[in-house]
Amino acid sequence: MGGLSPIDQLGVDVWDGPDGPGAGWVRDIAEDSRGFIWLATPNGLARFDGRRFRRFTAVDTPGLPHSGIRSLALARDGRLWVGLDHGGIRIMRGGVIEHPPEASAFPADTHAVQMVVDRHDVLWAATPQGLWRLAQGTAKQVRSGDIRSLALRGDVLWVRTRNDGLLRVEGDRISTHPDAPACKGAWVATSEARKPRHLLRRGHLAVGSGGVPVGTDK
Image (cartoon, rainbow, N blue to C red; front, top):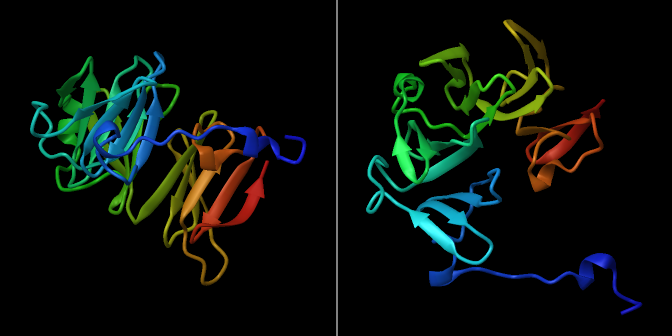
């Protein structure tokens, strides 16, 4: 054992086939306050309790128009926002799919590639058609353009666009930080995010182009 690195000593469990989440491709992951792991897949929403998966598909889940799930975000009250693959947003509460007013106001033909919930319980949705803000029964497009990724740091929302650089949203103010020539935006991450890709020093911001980090900032 002395020649093994710490990571080589870790066990690896694999869930696939009939005992897995129902799809080999997981698009997004969220963990709720009870420790359940939620997975967004092309074949439905899956919940993992540490031993087994429960699947939610359009076939067996009223209110879910189709099974393809693109993105997930947890509200402060424990509700799960669900971004649909073919457009639209729903909420999962207690195993039941709901369509609240703010989700009804969001375009049914627009899919959210990523969603985050800020400390004021506002849902932000990144879409190929722009940045959307959902709160208090309304949905408002606050920026047009191809939005690729979102990251929160305190009260500041960082927005990675494909063609318009990096946006900083704080309250009603939006400032733009242009990319270097020929760069196309791909993702942004902060140390406050809870995704494996986002393992950064506390307080740092990372910005990527085409999957490659192109800069970090405190």
